[in-house]
Image (cartoon, rainbow, N blue to C red; front, top):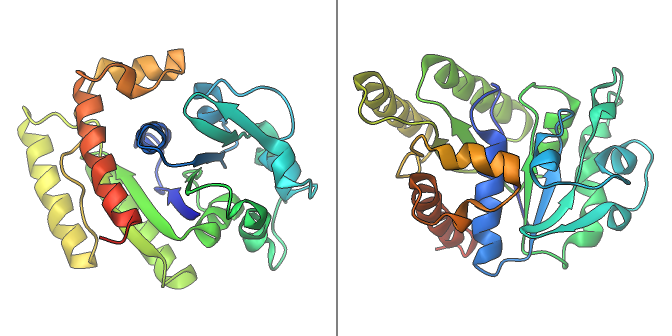
Length: 246
């Protein structure tokens, strides 16, 4: 099982949406896919219509077996989250940053790929996601704040997980009709290249279809003609090649 963290040290970068769409694309391509919601907001859980029951809190904090928290959805299996993850003092002891990695061991042969929707804040939950991951995908908006967050995340990785493979950057909410977005995409690509990070092509165009999947819980690929479905499909195909080591 390849574990991929979807992370950015900034909110509003389509982190959860990218997790949903990448997972849906991989599941559609025949990959046994697991989603993990590691964000106290539980947005991924809401989008996948998670049921009540044991979730990531019970696994990380109470030590419950990971298999008891698995839920089946139309787009792959899920380990959900809830607001209890926002409590102060969780996972602050030495060694706690490896709890998620250890908890996932029983699932290694059960899935082909695991996608972790990490919280935007740098803290115990995001560190658990980075320590559990084999690879990282960074979603960004075409703006200065996201670019700053990229450098912050890269610095964090250099200190905590210098050997972590960074698959690439997804630029989301892109409007190529605007000069500002075109210039920012060029700058992101240039600075990413300096850091040795690939930027996936194409950027994800703005689309009402992305808002709809958050409401309906359906796959973006149920609307294959949408800009978002076409853009994410192209990126999923690139990720599949990376998973296969090509």
